[in-house]
Structures are given as C-alpha cells and as structure tokens.
Amino acid sequence: MPYAVSRGGWLSLALFALVGAVCYYTGTLIARCMRADGSVATYPDVGQLAFGAAGRRTVALFMYVELYLVAVSFLVLEGDNLDKLFPGAGVELLAGYRLRGKQLYIVLAGAVVLPTTWLKNLGVLAYVSALGLVASAALTVSLVWAGVSESGFRGSGNVLNLAGLPTSLGLYFVCFAGHAVFPTIYSSMKNRERFSQVLLFSSALCSLNYGLTAVLGYLIYGDDVRSQVTLNLPSGRLYTKIAIVMTLINPLTKYALLVAPITSAIEERFSLAGSGSARVAVSTTVLVSTVVVASIVPFFGFLMSFIGSFLSVMATVFFPCLCYLKIYRAKGLRRVEVAAIVAILLLGAFVAITGTYTSLLDIIGVVQTKQTERS
Image (cartoon, rainbow, N blue to C red; front, side, top):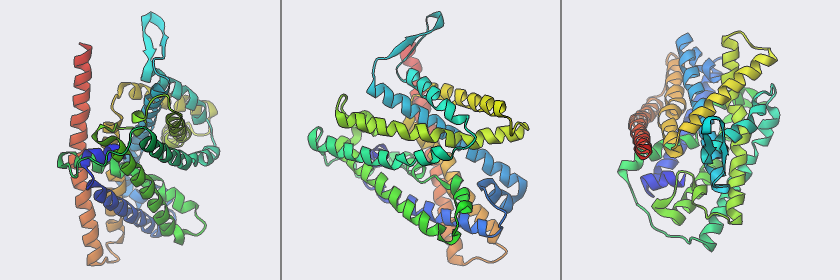
C-alpha cells in the first residue's frame, strides 16, 4: 500500500476509498445473482447462470489464473523478506550452480508449504490464516516504531502523480480482490441475509488497515518506499524482525488455500479426484511450477499491479456487473442502478487498459535491465 501511494500521490487515497466502495457494491451484486438460483454455489456457477457454459469457463479461467499468480507473488514475498532477514545465504548445487539469496529462500518456502498442499481438509489452515490480522497489526506497530525511533516522519511526497495512477489503481483493486471466494462464503452462511453487513464490516476493516499502513509507510519513507515496505525497515532491529516474521506467516498459511481450487480442477479434468497419490502429484507439480515462475520474477510490485489491473478488475468489476445485468435484465432494473453499473464498468475498463499496459511496460523494462546487467 505505501508503494501504491508513492506511485499515485496522496490524492490517490481518494481513489482507494472509491475502489473500496466499488468492490463492496459489486460484492453485493454477486450475492443478488446467487439469490436468483438456489443451486449456485461457486463463482463459475454465477457465470454459468448468466451466460451458460461459456460464462462458466471464462470465469473459471480468470479465477484460476489470478489464484495462480497470487500464489507466485506469495513466494516472491517470502523470498524477498527472508533475504532481508538472513542476507548472503547460498548453497552449491550440481555442475557448479549456486542457489542463493532470494531464489534459495523461494525454494525453501516452497518446500515448507508443500506438505500443506497435500491435505484433503484445509479447515485447519483456514483458522491459522486468521493470523493475517495479527501480522497486519504487527506491521503497523513496526512502522510507528520505525517512524518514532529511527527514520522520523518526512511529511512530504507527491500530491498527485498522474503517470503512476494506473499502477496505484491496480494495486488498490488487489486489496479488495476477494470476490472469487464470496459465493463460497455466502453459501456457507446460516443467515445469508446478513452477507451485505458482513461484507461491509470486512471492507471497512480492510480499508482502515491498508489505509493506515499506506499513510504511515509513505510518511516515513516518501518516494523511497519499496514495493514491500518491510524491505525499507532497518536491518537488525527487533521491530524489523517481528514485522518480517509476522508478514511471512500469512503467505505460508494461505498458499495451500489458494492453489486448492486449481489442483481440484485439474484432478476433475483428468478424472483423478479421490486418489491420494494423484492429489500429491498434482499439488507438487503446481507448487514446483509456481516456485520456478517466482524465481524468475524479480518485480513484486509490478506483478501485483498486473494482477490487480487485469485479473482482479475482471473478477471484481466486469464479471459481477455483467452477470447481474444479464440475470436481472428481464426482471427490470432501475435507471439509476444501470447508470451506476455502467459507470463502474467504465472505471474498470480504464484501470484494465491503462494499468495492464503500464505494468507490462514496467515488467519488460526490468527484464531488459536485468539482461543488460548480466551481459
């Protein structure tokens, strides 16, 4: 979040609030779509209800790609932060190849989470992943500690940076990109009428958490803030170690939850469901592939911007709005409601086009720079 503000400037926080409101509203649209048919239980089901088999395949494809890339970003996060905590580590492999630094820690993180991907029941991990709230609080406290005792608060920064707004908006959408699991949550609730209230509370809590972290991080580090604010914290300090350790726990507990729908889809596609050995083989293959991709990707911030600008916008804006319009068109919709949805779709189109273009340019630029440095 501090990095997102550094790209767009202080005034971009107003857009952060707008994105939060939009994502809350589109979340309620998903719930309304599910009320139209009691058999709908997953996000692809919503796509099928609206647009048939083609809708189901499209929603599923974007959902699985988004989950896969978020899993990759988690491993990148682990590698960067572990390298900050224990710098200079390396291991000699066969043929003189040396695995070191970030790449070494990505492989180690993959080895740690591998057994969790073999579990058939991920309920335990769902409870453990609640530590994410503790991790967020620890990071906020660490930033306050750093600002008071070490770096101080600069109180500066850009008011508005139009060139960086597409990147900021993409990252803001990532903060609220939970729509793929909303149907599952809705179906599991005893009192589904309270879904909107639960969604409003969680959205407000996320906004407060992300907003506070963004303000503190940008006040302390200004335009020097990195894509992961933990990398800005001074090495060797107690609060830095606490912040990094707590930040590392969250991805480790959520990785298996992210890739579970992907492995399940692969098992069903090849009629492997129910086989324990098949689950282990498929899960291991998926994990190894994410480790390889994460080892190649040297740009956490740009990757997250791409995920937010393209994939998250599809899941949080286009699919809910288009499915809702298709399902309820015959029943009649108010003009005000249609106008609001059209405005949201235009915002989504702007973010998807400009954000994706900008993030891809940034990624290509970093890759070219890395190749130049090696040659």
